[in-house]
Image 1 (cartoon, helix red, strand yellow):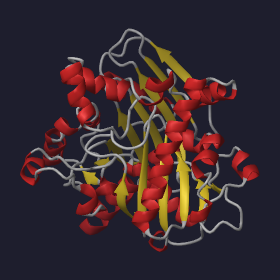
Image 2 (cartoon, helix red, strand yellow):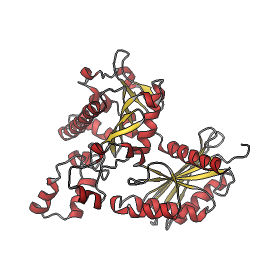
Image 3 (cartoon, rainbow, N blue to C red):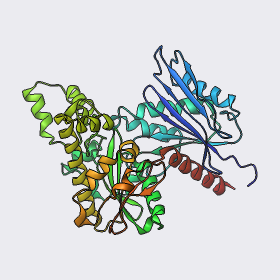
Image 4 (tube, rainbow, N blue to C red):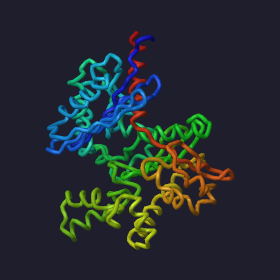
Amino acid sequence: MTGTPTRVLVLNSGSSSVKYQLLDMADGNRLAVGLVERIGEETSRLAHTPLQGGGGEKREKNGPIPDHAAALKAVAEELASDGVGLDSPELAAIGHRVVHGGLRFTAPTVIDDEVLAEIERLVPVAPLHNPANLTGIRTAMSLRPDLPQVAVFDTAFHTTMPESAARYAIDVATADEYRIRRYGFHGTSHAYVSRETAKLLGKAPEEVNVIVLHLGNGASASAVAGGRCVDTSMGLTPLEGLVMGTRSGDIDPAVTFHLKRVAGMSADEIDALLNKKSGLVGLCGDNDMREIRRRVDEGDPAAALAFDIYIHRLKKYIGAYYAVLGRVDAVVFTAGVGENAAPVREAAIAGLEELGLAVDADLNAVRSDEARIISPDYARVAVAVVPTDEELEIARQSFALVQSSASSNE
């Protein structure tokens, strides 16, 4: 239809930040990207880069931005100065990243009062993320009440997990009353990467089984069978699973009781220990994989042990998800560490030749922003690197939902 708006603004609202991208879904091109950080502080900063027409110079503004409303108004001004403002008739929707959607939200959802209330009810299981997401949504709705606002949930992709994978083995009544189950996170990334991996293999998503390793400061693994998630490493919260930058990942739950009884630590102190002072930073004092590898190469034993623990956990999940899937077409690395740390990819796959996995040293060493296979031709299972693009995925899902709604109303 001529004149149909095709632009989507993607917002990722944190407790003191707003990341944003403006995309044109007619061709998938980015028109602008930016970040507002340290909201509520005197040293707030807005960094905006226009990309329309070949790109432009990054613009920065420093000074107090008191709240999210002021932050989004500042973003709107930057976009307007590029001729792509929030009031543009070319804007089809605003897509919001929402971390926790519980069991109710299994797909992108147009936001109304009922949806807002349900996201709020989920705050107890996502206390760090959902409140900030809600603030961003409400602010955007106040600025453009006439525009469809779409929530895309990190948990949605994982709602296809069978109960055997999603349930914890605790009293069912207690679990149900307090919504205790495995939800999983990074779902937008896992959805995008698993689909792009199928494309890289020249097949439809329904035809392939993929193990996705999303390795950033936060890290998660998923087992994807025919385009549907059947298991993932994160659980009720993003703490479960792989060793991460500052999170412990899997741990005996009795450790928490021990710390309370023997060390006299409070619940909040244990929470801070496991989420902010554990993982790589707890093991060696660094959570930057580049710095850890530099220290390993220099013979630092603490860094070497941290790296080995990180890799050991990765291997365990690769093997476990291989067993869950039965047949694996590809193991794929993504996110900051997964896309850029060749030593991590090499070490994670080393020794798994009997599973049909191998890495070609030369292919693995290549640095590229393109999706690529890094396994030798003889490998039975492809090993790939696929850069994630959560903003594009959110924009795609938001635009498709708005288009579908418009078509059904015609």
